[in-house]
Image 1 (cartoon, rainbow over the protein chains, first blue to last red):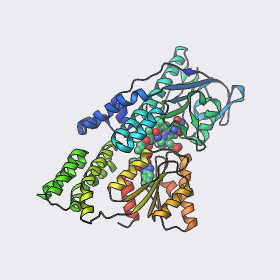
Image 2: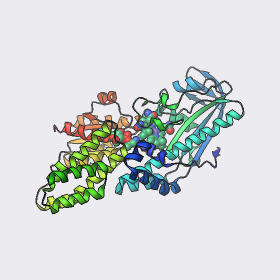
Image 3: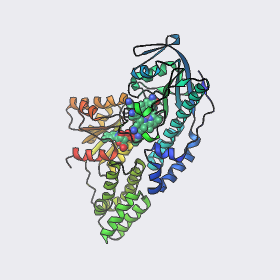
Image 4: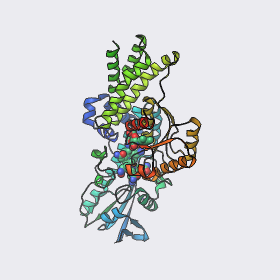
Length: 231
Length: 213
Ligand code: B12
């Protein structure tokens, strides 16, 4: 199964602050020391990031009710899937992870120094987000070069495709061992800093909307301003 | 003089400055100020203010954590003096805290623990992925007033219900409060939890309410 090589997104300190739920502009004025801590965490944490993207492209055959029939008798199903992927000619399943080394490091740190530990957690969340964005951008651009459109990335956990519904579907179609990711019986992905998604590609697809519109927390989430495409 | 000092203490918490808060705590001890008064009238108002700010969106999570650390540093200086004089901080209640079985989400739960501890609760943090039976056993062992349960995903928060059902089945006199990103009011009503909060500061108010404080 293909692994996308060579994506190592650059992460800046603002992304780390945002991933901790903070507004960088306000923090800069109010608590400059937190900016420094985030910067240090980024420098310390970056070497622990193992960016990996696993993907698989599968042709779409048809859409019946909420089932998207794929080649080789595979399928994806769910309300969100039906809403967005009907017009797609193919789907790309994507799994992005930064591995477990940063996670181990941040959880160790959090016990003795929670402020730095939280910043390291922020580095991890920002990193996997940036990775997912970069991967999605890559596939979108590739589609556009072929004059095709792409859907927003759809992730289990969004409205209309619950975690328990979507995750087993995605994991069934990907050989996730290749990048060391597993799904627990409660559908939690390990390592923790991992994101799963699917995008649709096709001539009849018009881009539109943003992921947050389909999030269960779209009215209350403090992290919303940072999410552009994937989460 | 102590009023001035108390103000500076609260400010050190608001600034999240653990060096200054520890220095001020030492200054209080050197000046013969009752360490318990330093906590309740000096540092605590700072913690409360950060909490209020956080609750209405005027403070962010890392600031809250910094404030918690500043409070910890002050208490570390004051506590030995209190122990020596035989005074201890009143324990507001005993909380057994954990992330439910099948879930390994650590930070939210740990932050709740930090905030509860700095507000005067005795917290037994059992870590992550904790089976219901272990939680119940711990709660019985320490005579817990409250069990606090964290979960990251809707798929793992069902375990919160399992714990509540088990408490009811055994007729234990322990209250259960729940939290975590996917937890909603509807869920809380459905599983008949005693309390719930969206964040770590709210967790303190809820715990206090449950204790009738
Ligand atoms: C950062 C983040 C991520 C990061 C890091 C996750 C991690 N844990 O390391 C990344 C990008 C990796 C990620 C991935 C995913 N995520 Co995510 N993520 C978030 C986000 C934006 C913030 C979570 C967070 O860390 N907050 C900071 C901590 C400190 O907050 P907290 O844990 O919630 O704790 C606070 C409160 O909940 C409360 N609290 C916590 N415990 C307790 C206990 C008690 C007793 C009390 C009273 C209070 C309390 O107090 C704490 C402190 O204030 C939330 C959305 C949000 N706004 O919350 C989504 C969210 C949790 N993710 C979600 C989803 C769906 C996913 C994915 C499944 C997406 C996917 N398909 O790939 C994956 C799953 C990852 C996995 N390992 O399986 C959903 C879950 C909803 C659901 N249906 O289950 C959420 C809610 C967003 C959404 N609505 O779509 N995620």
